[in-house]
Image 1: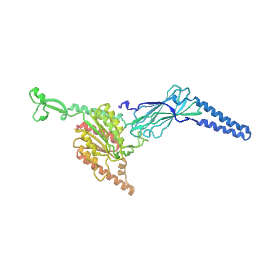
Image 2 (image 1 turned 90 degrees about the vertical axis):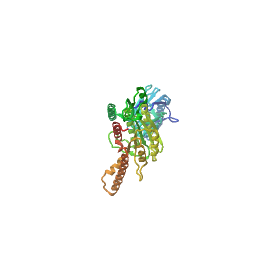
Image 3 (image 1 turned 30 degrees about the horizontal axis):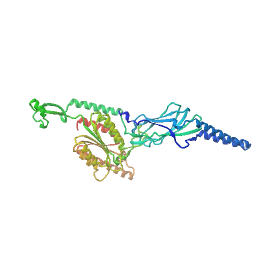
Image 4 (image 1 turned 90 degrees about the horizontal axis):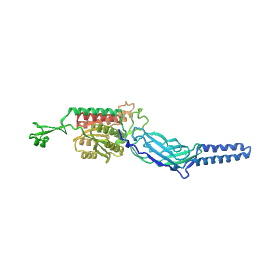
Amino acid sequence: MISPSLHPAPVSAVCERRRRWGFGLTPRCIGLLLVGFLWLIPGFWEWRLAFAMPAWEALVLLAALLDGLRLPAPAKLTATRSWSNAPALGNETEIELRVENHGKTILDCRLVDDLPPALVAEPATLRLTAFPHVPAKLRYRVAPKERGDWQTGWLYLRYRSGLGLLDRWARAPLTQTVRVYPTLRAGEEQQIFLARSRQIDLHLRRSQQRGLGRDFESLRDYREGDDLRDICWTATARRGSPITRQYQSERSQPVWIVLDCGRLMRARVAMAQTAQNSGRAPSTKLDHACTTAVALAQLALYSGDRVGLLAYGQGIQQRLLPGRGASHLRQLIESLALARAESSEADHLRATAQLNRLQPRRSLILWITDLAESAMRPEVIDGALQLLRRHVLLFVAMAQPEVEQIAQARPKNVEQLFRAAAAQQMAARRELLLARLREQGALTLDLNPEALTSSVLNQYLSVKERAMV
């Protein structure tokens, strides 16, 4: 589970006057003023009755003035915004607005919460009734659309009394920086992977695979054929006979998550319209990659592995050395929230060189990227081949569902025929590049973003079960 400290902190402020005059007539008051013109109708027959119109108008304006004097000043209103959960892609976030009325009049308030477009497409007008000295609350939901840090704006208020003849305008400086995180999954599907990981861990403990890893397991008498480097000379001196160390497979392995943040990961993918994502804007490939990264990090940390992160574009955007624990998971989620897709091609070879310096020992590397369509071999393939000399590589290429649909569709005219041929050629080239990696020992996946998370988690568990690292 994610720590509640990921939630944005509540922010509270005293309201202030929005404009210099800070008040206005309500539609009800304007309607009553228009009613006064009806006195002109009998004025055509009796001119004295026409003087009733200004008298009516003056009476309405006087009532509006007295109604406005009953309204408390903006300084007597306090507004608070609080968040019920951490804003994350794919999940609705509930926001609570609270208004405290320190005046003596019951207020009918209309609120507009100025939130960035990453949280809400268009601010809605909300309504609540604020009784004197009793906090009034309302809640509404928003669906974040983009990751990263976003600045919220002011809370704007229009309030009136029960007569509703005059509005007063106020605003509260509820500005704060809100961080939108990748999709945080903790449902039944994640529990299934955790249970399977636990089963694999118990199996490895029972099997006690000696000699395959470099974790010290026990001491025993030297046998012919044992490696001389494994002799424990201190134990040999104490016992007077050769003693050798016995090793077992490491249970804790370093797992690196490498994310390509180049231009190819900016492409938006229209997911299948289901009840869960109906009405949502398409997410970028990088958003799906970050969602997968969070799910894998949770599973790997639960399995006892250490998880690191490298997000890169033209330069290194985010770097987190392998670690474990709840605090490390939070740091990783914070880093993923700040990863941004760039408009230029990513420097894959630079990221490869950086990773080899950070992780000289053998580890499992999950590399989520995409393959550029060019006549030459993409740099990402060259970088992957360099990593294979030392590490176990799980190379994931994110496909574009639209291209796959065009390749599989039956053409009905010449234009569709050429489009299908081009799509099939692109698919064949991707398969050749991935086959080259598989020949060198890499684990490769070429799949649509909607199947990314479950496939990667299954592949990770398979690597753990086979003790490949």
